[in-house]
Every structure is written in structure tokens, then in C-alpha cells.
Length: 171
Image (cartoon, rainbow, N blue to C red; front, side, top):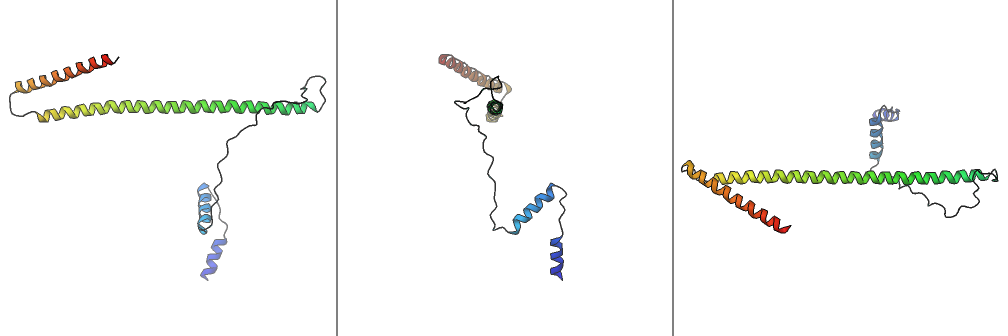
């Protein structure tokens, strides 16, 4: 009896109400036989057009003297050439947008690196300042601590002056 119920349930048509149901059905079908290989289609190929003809024979165009059949040949060649030109323009536009996108990404990356470097320098400076405060002896008068801070500022100023002079020498 239970076998009949299961077979009846399987035979019921399944109504697909939305995309989720469709996806679920496809997955269930795939999982019924996991040993069966799944065919994954290849991605679409890049569209390429044939190069323009080197020599076009018997083209009279729509001018006087052309036979009634020649106009169709002319029209076909004209349409082909317009399609080729359109493809070339679209391709150049796509390349232009792609280059612009990559340039913008590179700019953003450089700006982020500069910002990070600036913040890193600020962090290190703050950390160094905190270390120098920790190294100072806590015993002593305020004058001695002020004189030490004056020494530190004098040292940093002399280092800055040396850096500036070496920068000027490089230029």
C-alpha cells in the first residue's frame, strides 16, 4: 500500500509557481542520479566579423544602367558594411569604457593607499609620542619634564632640517 501511495505522489504533476520552484526541480532532477555527468554549456564566443571585401564585382548600385537584380546585391553589401562599421564602433566604445573603468579603479586604489599611508604615519607618530611619555621619569619637577620636551622638539627640528637639506640636494 505504501508503494502505491509513493508512486501516486511521484506521478502528480508539479506546478511551477515561481523561479525558485523551477530551480528546485532542476536540482532534484540532477540529484536523482549523481553519477550522471552534467553538461555545462560553453560561454558564448566573441563576435567577429569578416574583413571587408578586397574587390567587389559588378556593383552598379542603384544608379541608372543597373539591372533589377543588381540592386539587391548592392543592398546586401551595403547592409553588411554598415553592420561591420557598427560592430567596430561598438567595440571601440566598449574598449574605451573598459579602459576608463580600469583607470578609475587604479585612481581609487592609489587614493586609498595614500590615505592609508597618511593614517599609518599619524598612528605611528601617536604611538611614538605615547612611548616617549612612558619613558619619561615620573619623579621630578615640571621644569625638568619641560626641558626634556624642549630637547625632543629641538631634535625633531634638527632632523627635519637635515631631511629638507637632503631633499634639496637630490633635486
